[in-house]
Amino acid sequence: MTIANAGQATATNVLATFTSGDFVARDTGGVRALGTMAPGQPVRFWQPLFATADLRGKTTAVLKVTTTYTDINGQSYE
Image 1: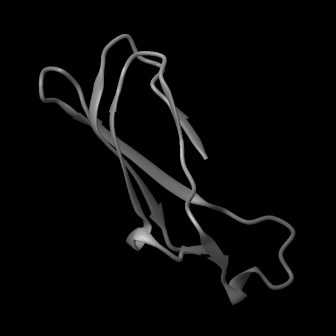
Image 2 (image 1 turned 120 degrees about the vertical axis):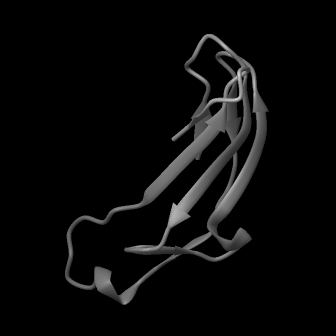
């Protein structure tokens, strides 16, 4: 997966959290710490997953990922 900072300021404490549902994270408890990202900077990372039995018979699946970060003023975003 690749996440990029599309903003105009540095993002700190960047986290990607994978919520269990159709897929479950196999490693890291479903949380990836991406650190600090400069404006325009992409970060590419791997998150091993497994598909749940709930996918049986479905034609589409959902992978929910929430990204949180803090700006230079200490304001948190999700």
